[in-house]
Length: 107
Image (cartoon, rainbow, N blue to C red; front, side, top):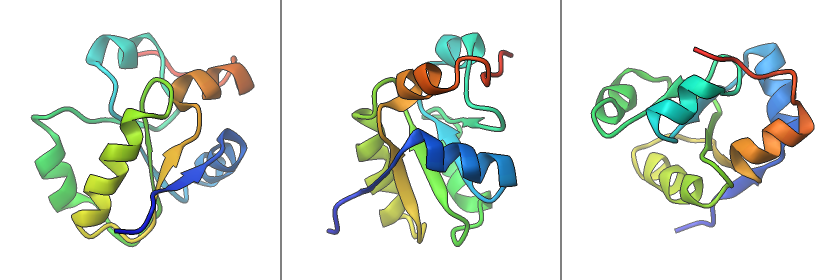
């Protein structure tokens, strides 16, 4: 299996600004509600199967967690499910927060 591509927060911000990528948050619901990357979709064990069915597998998919560790395993999972361009966010949400402290959505 190919290594998971990693992407930095500035590249993600560019893609998010253009709306040209699907961004998924795999942290717990309380963390997502406290703050997340704008337009990110929160995924849990109960929603991931439907997400895989419904989502465009040719659009870049960016996965993030707290610090960029768990998202690598999730990114590998999505690659196995047929997503063509999957990346794990380097530094996770913490990395995003330190780069863009004012660009965070709360539920």
